[in-house]
Amino acid sequence: MANNGEKLFIKGNEAIARGAIAAGLKCYFGYPITPQNDIPEYMSAALPAVGGEFVQAESEIAAANMLIGAAACGVRSMSSSSSPGISLKQEAISYLAGSQLPTVIVNMNRGGPGLGDIGPSQGDYFQSVKGGGHGDYRLLVLAPGTCQEAYDLTIKAFDLAFKYRNPVMILGDAILGQMKEPVITWTPDEKDEKEGHDWRMCGAKGREGRILKSLFLSEGSLAAHNQMLQDKYTDMASYTQQEEYQIDDAELVVVAYGSIGRIVKSTIKKLRNEGHKVGLFRPITLYPFPSGDLKKLAEQGKKFLTIEHNLGQMVEDVRLSIRTITDSDFFGFLPGNLPTPDDFEGPILKSLGGK
Amino acid sequence: MSEQEIIAFDRADALVDVPTHYCPGCQHGVVQRLAGELLSEMDLTENTLLVTSIGCSVFLYNYLHVDSVEAPHGRAPAVATGVKRARADKFVLSYQGDGDLASIGMAEIMHCANRGENISIIFVNNTVYGMTGGQMAPTTMIGQKTTTSPAGRNAAKEGMPIRMAEIISQLGGTAFSARVAVNNVKNIRKAKKAMKKAFEVQQKELGFGFIELLATCPTNWRMTPIKANERIEEELIPYFPLGVFKDLTVEAED
Ligand SMILES: Cc1ncc(C[n+]2csc(CCOP(=O)(O)OP(=O)(O)O)c2C)c(N)n1
Ligand code: SF4
Image (cartoon, each protein chain N blue to C red):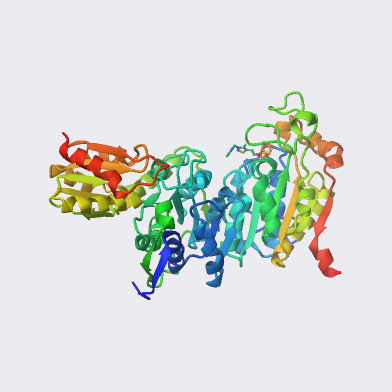
């Protein structure tokens, strides 16, 4: 990790944009939607300045399809949007996954369904980790909780995309996108310029033409393709990441991700000072989900509470992880309101004392 | 081969030696052959990145010796934009039918042309959705019976057939837009010339190159290939006039 160690005071959105450029981004395609406009705005000036291509597409649909073209050429490409825009990208995301094209897509989740509001929410968890488009596929989904993490994970996202030949989603929200924090920038060691050299389109010179596609009509060929994808997803499962805070002697483990995980951490700090044995498990990879580590905690006899900024989505994955041993309580903070650490105190104490 | 034998006609290098999946008399095959011949003659094969779309032409990637990527229905111009932005040094070619380009993909084609992307788009207008079984297309003629316009297309309810080559010629980024037909030898020759122009404007980096080809779908027109050819002459060409609607190379030569 070559470190040029500049310390900047920037928004989460800008941290993502800067991280992508540090990672060697070549093509960015986007369409304006709040609360992520800082990303295309930053890119429109910064990316051409380093020899990259910025296109404000005519729609999220077009932007996502431009990703297909650029990713097929084996260059580092990215798009960003927010919930309704991500819905429009889903058809292309399914094609990207089916054709095994590496790219990075950012979703600064806002409130929904429909037009909803522009405030933070975690309502797109299912759409992100279960495949919001058609067909059997998975995205790698990374959920930063701080601006520094947003920067670091964006760089990581490109490596993962190329490692697995799969789209990677960065799932944030309006809290992460709009808050300003100090970020220490760094640039990764030179990336492998041969990325994709054995599959990308670059002109069929002295070999057969390469076809990047998701259509498999002949008997059994789709089944074989799906098996190969399944093997890849199984392989991905070894790549999980989470933050564990005050967990060793905790009686109650609170599971929360992204901005909410961070706010819960403040609540837990306070409750710890008051002598309550509570800890935080903050998944950073939402797909693959850190099920194995959660299960280990369940085996130690801990109780669980899942807190989300939605009506209850990740809690299903928590329950799947620990289902043979125990269950998880759930507290859903309704999108349309902004939570503070105080909002979580009551639910945590209730779970700690209950059952 | 005896010494007297002269090869007058052969398969272009860019064309893969496999039978195609098209119905008898379908002119997708003619158009693809012309594309393959031009890639060979213009020495573009090894430099070409192809975007294929959804419709009967979807298997084009099996018939040309080039690298290719598959676009979702209608989105080929956006995919091609991504390809060209990533690899400006390559020749980028895309191929779409009328349902694909003029219906679901209307926004993508308009904005791609308007941005003046340096790519070439081959647009096969057979006035019907071929692959899905002959439903009405935006180019279906008034009175034409299809599986979703059983009484014939009705202008009052379904609008007029869309003339894409004319519309595309109006957009600022378009360098070349023409309509040709592949219904007889003379028109096929002209079609190849026009396609070559559409390819050349990309090579000269003048902007967007668009070529509309009137072609038959004998299966869904429920006609013999010969009757289908006659229909192009008698019914289609009067409404979809052949010609060049924009050509920046002419202005450039002035
Ligand atoms: C999003 C989406 N909608 C619908 C379809 C089904 N579909 C496949 S081909 C086609 C029509 C293609 O017609 P056209 O572009 O005219 O090409 P042709 O088959 O006539 O060559 C449709 C509607 C699809 N594949 N994807
Ligand atoms: S259905 Fe029509 S367009 Fe499709 S292959 Fe047959 S003749 Fe050609």
